Image 1 (cartoon, rainbow, N blue to C red):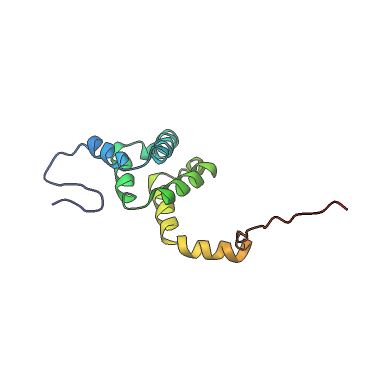
Image 2 (cartoon, rainbow, N blue to C red):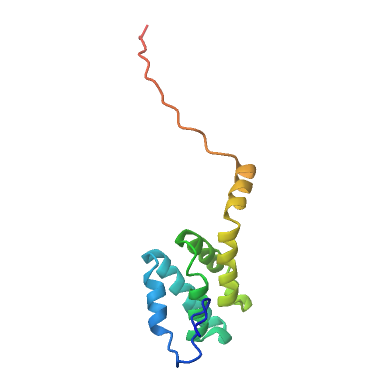
Length: 131
């Protein structure tokens, strides 16, 4: 039986390397680069997550989320240096999933806080007479 969330099949010896490549190939180049950067940083600083299976589970968990939300979550994770506090793939996956879930409400709150951008108005040229 194959788990729909992580892809684990209890009947087979499983090597997730090919599945990781397949999951990454579905992403844009910029998103792949950010995910790999976060993966390297997490594997370096969080010893318990220095494992190919945890990396695969993270990628499988965020496979249904759009690239723009993934990029936003990974950038926030890297900028705030959460890996220094021993936060790994599970924490990063939670950030990405919450950004996807809360996107509409977050946009509404940002509009309340900062306001909308001004509408584009057509400026008509007037001829001025030097007088």
